[in-house]
Image 1 (tube, helix red, strand yellow):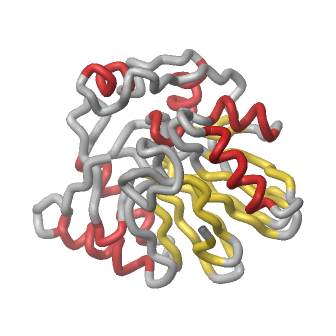
Image 2 (cartoon, helix red, strand yellow; image 1 turned 90 degrees about the vertical axis):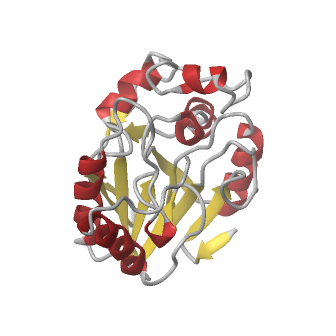
Image 3 (cartoon, rainbow, N blue to C red; image 1 turned 180 degrees about the horizontal axis):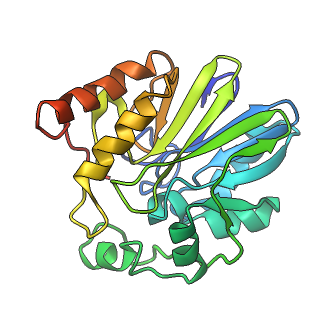
Length: 243
């Protein structure tokens, strides 16, 4: 599903466009020249299907890196298999990297999610050692900036990628279209930190907003970030999206 000439949605679940497994977050393939990066991986229950979609969208390019927005399983559960399939390095916040390397399902909330019926019993976190710390990258013709964005979780990173059409923000669960947010009942969710993170992302003046679930904004991304900032400024939380 092409969103822009340089950005293809390769995975999406029931909180999005229903392309792959129902529990998948959005995963995006971003291309420039001969290089491509994958932002998030889905939950790992439909990895073969996701891999086929990536291969089709690559159109002969090489996958230079996999970028994780955070360690929750709907975003990172497919990282180990896709990294092995494509031979691509994975980059994530150091906290997420440590949790995934250890296969720590409790720390990423998967253990509780299975218990509470949020995820099926066969949803697993496959350990992946050797994840690289999130940082700014130059990968062929792609310039990628890592923007630490705590609030939804303590390991959240937004990825800012300069495309021919403008600056694209891949925000994971930090902020969604229409200024929605996902504030969870977990120890590492911090509404005040989330407000600061969204303000920092708004200051980047993005053109495109590609969140982890729901609608995307291929133009006028600032409108959606402004809605979240305005809600925090008014002393109320933006509209909540469960993710």
